[in-house]
Image (cartoon, rainbow, N blue to C red):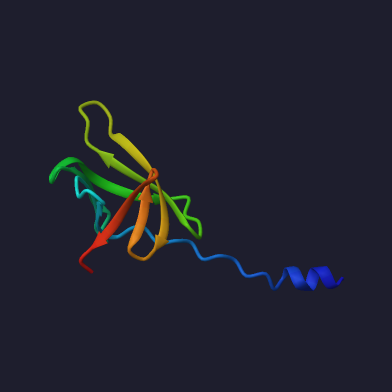
Length: 103
């Protein structure tokens, strides 16, 4: 009976928020921009490689999956990245470290 009481008091981890903002890798060759309204893009050497809308999927306490959907001739394209937060200004995107720029 005591176990039942204890299990009701277990705190659940809060889901990580989507990585809103502008992010760059250490060499500043790759960038990710995610806006509050869902518009997003991935830049290589300062030029947009993909742009479209992003969805934040399967969030956990440490991150989630960022799904960028972009226009293709026959069907929308998707790029999915695993995002892991180290802190509020540092994430990894499929293992590559990115740092938040500005606010």
